[in-house]
Image (cartoon, rainbow, N blue to C red; front, side, top):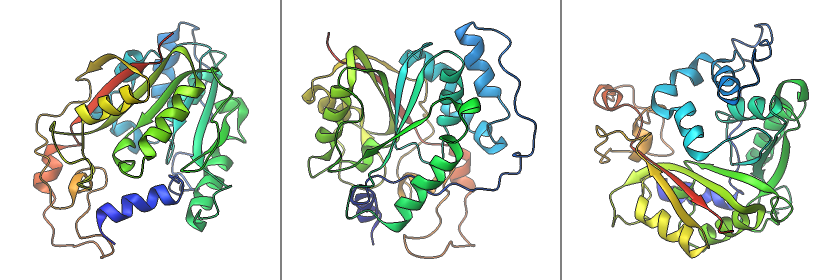
Length: 294
């Protein structure tokens, strides 16, 4: 299976979250103390530094800039937020506790259990995510799960959501009209003036969106969002990385944190020299903020 075909398989499996490791080396640490202030920025800083997050997750902050990114997108107390395909919960561990302590609501758009084509792995990934987050309301608040995929229904009651976060997912959705289906779902769920927040690996403008290397152009994403009825409110270079040459042997997955060293379906190559790619760091990323017109 090629890299491109594998990414398309993700869509066929309803954009399933990967399985989460149940055993965590930091899991035996005491539960974090509640934030010492109700000032929104202080609560967000508490969530980012919280012991709920693994050391490996925190190590990526230098590339993913959670404080600056969430402030740019306008995360605020009391909001209802949809996190699309949250995977292992990198953003969940920040946003859900923040909303828990500011009176908001977190919704995870995960594998659609009504999809007859859903794989066993996708079902397991959703179940593991639910076991971690939806059963710990004192820590994460009222985490809700909703099915998201090619044939899924509404993600939330119409006009009830303040912010939809799509982190490094749009490159998986090219072709077959899925991007417009997804963006339409987001627009329906958002309140007038609500925000669609997008971060993704950035290809040069004019690049083929179906190349399958994990990169997608900013211009393509903006065009797709505008087609779905969104307005571009702002763009940022918060997550830019000028060292990223975007010409790696295994696409964006050559870079950290994946560090792929062999073609898909083959075992890792122990002789592969990661040093050049580790020196680049994580990918160059677009950071975009769209709004649903009032």
